[in-house]
Length: 489
Ligand SMILES: Nc1ncnc2c1ncn2[C@@H]1O[C@H](COP(=O)(O)OP(=O)(O)OP(=O)(O)O)[C@@H](O)[C@H]1O
Ligand SMILES: Cc1ncc(CO)c(N)n1
Ligand SMILES: [Mg+2]
Image (cartoon, rainbow, N blue to C red; front, side):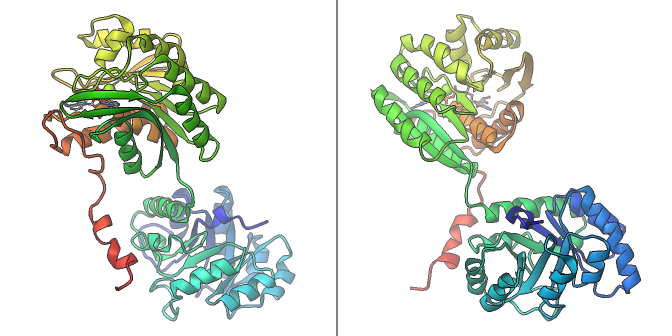
C-alpha cells in the first residue's frame, strides 16, 4: 500500500483520556464520520491483551470507512490485527526490523524532528513522516517544539508525505500554510471535543485549504464599469469575496457612474476571442459568467470559443441596460444572445425588464414570471432564473429548473443603492457552481450573498450606488497581517 499525500490531510491520533458520555469506539466512529483521512491508534497504558482487543475493534471501524489505519509503536499488534501499518517514534523498534515483520506493502511512519532524521528515515524506507511538535501540545508533555524553518526544510528534503503533529487545532492550523506539509495530525483537537464530527469536518476543511496550491477559477466575460459597481469590476470583487480566482475577458469599455452610462466602446470581436484563447490555453476556468455583450458579432465570437474549449458551468446574464437606465445591448443582439449563448448556459439570469423584452410579455404577477421563465427556457437545457429585484413589495426570484418552478422569496431591503446587483448575483451563482454546488443550491447561496450585500447599506455616488462586495470578510484579517509578514524595519 503506498501512502498517498491526500491520505495525510486529516490524520487522527486517538486519545482515550477524554472522558465524555460516549464510549471510545463511538468517539472514533464519529471522527471517521467527520472525515478524518488517516487513523492512528495510540495507547500508552493498555496491557497487551487489552490493546489487542481494542485494535481489532478499531481496525474494523477504519475498514468500514476505508481509512488507512496504523498502530502506534506496537508492531506485533499491527501485524496480528492486519493494520495498514505502524507509526514508530524515535525510540521505538527500528524501521528495518519493523519492515522485516510487516513486509513491503505495509505503511511505516516515523516521527522525526530534524532534516537529518528525515533523510535517514526516508532512506531506510519510511512511507511518511510525522514532524512535531509544531505547536505547544498537552498530549506529549516532553515534546519539544520544531521550528517552522526546520519543518519547511524537512518538507523540502524528502519526497514522502510529511504530516505536522503537536498542538494542532482549528485556531492555529492555517499558520502551517506554505510549510509544505501534506496534512495535520490532531489529537485533543478531535477527541477532546464535545462535537467530534463537527470538529473533524472543520479541521478537514481547514487542512484542505492550508495544503491547497490551487483554487477554483471563475472567468467573467463582461464589460468594464468605470464606476466599479457592476460588470467586470463587480464580478472580480464577487469572485474574490467567494475565495476564488477571478479571470476576465473584456467585451466593452463603458464610461458610466451611478447616474448613467455616458459612453460605450465595444472591443472588436476578434480581440474578445483572443482574450478567451489566452485564458483557456493557460488557466482553465471552472465556471464562466457572461455579462454585457452588446452586439451579435461579439456574442458569436464568445459562443464559438466556449464551444471550442468545452467550457462548463456557464451563467449568462442578459444585460440589456444599466440600473441607471443606459442601454448596454443593441436591439439586434437580443435575438443572437438567445440563439447563441442561452443554449450553452447552465443558468440564464434575466431581470424582469429583460424577461419582458425576451418574451414580448408584460410581467406583473408571479404567474406571469412563471410563464415568462418557461418561454425563455424553451430551446435550452439550462435553467432560467427570473430576478425579482424590480418588484415593488418583495424581491422574490424564480428558478425554472428541469421543468420545475423553485421560488426564492426575498425580503425587499430598503436600499436605493442597487447598482450591479444582477452582475453580482450571476457571478455568485458561477462561484457556487465552480465550488460544486448544483444549480438550485448555487442560486440559494448567491441570493443570501446579494441580500447581505444590500443589507450592508454602502452609499456611494449621486445615483443608485454600488454594493459592498467584501461585507462578509473580517477586517482584522487585513489589518493585522503586518505583524506577521513585515520584518521590523
Ligand atoms: N432591494 C432589494 N432587496 C432585496 N433583494 C434585491 C433588491 N434589489 C435586487 N435584489 C436582488 O438582487 C438580485 C439581482 O436582481 P435585480 O433585479 O436587481 O438584477 P438586475 O436588474 O439585473 O441588476 P443590475 O442590472 O443592476 O446589475 C436578485 O436576487 C434580486 O432579488
Ligand atoms: C459594464 C456593465 N455591465 C453590466 C451592467 C449592469 O448593471 C452595467 N451597469 N455595466
Ligand atoms: Mg442586470
